[in-house]
Length: 148
Image (cartoon, rainbow, N blue to C red; front, top):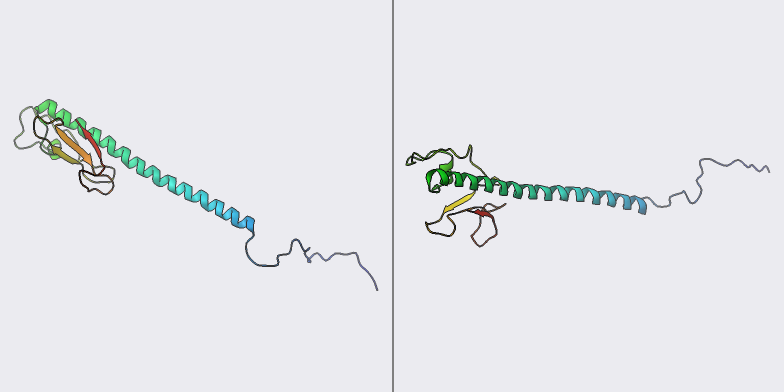
């Protein structure tokens, strides 16, 4: 009988041999970590978009407030509607120097702003606000607003 010291290269040592098919714990851990990182990036992007829409709405509210103040300074009264800032009304006085806006201004969610002219002598001459993402609501609900 001849004994050989030659090792069979195709034979695997017991610690390298897989006895069951499937993923190892390390492979699963790496996959879950990668998925967690991807989810956090997506959630962060959606939060940024939400904040951007709020910021755009606040900026547009200030622009409208400025246009309303310019109208008041020229004419001596606030306009009846926001359309009066875009187009000269039929009954406009000679002091009207508009248009005060180049185009209709929308909130960050592409909804029109709400504008209500309060009666003379009111603490606030007008109310200007956005209902937010859903575009509708009641006065008791929270919304973005600006007053004169």
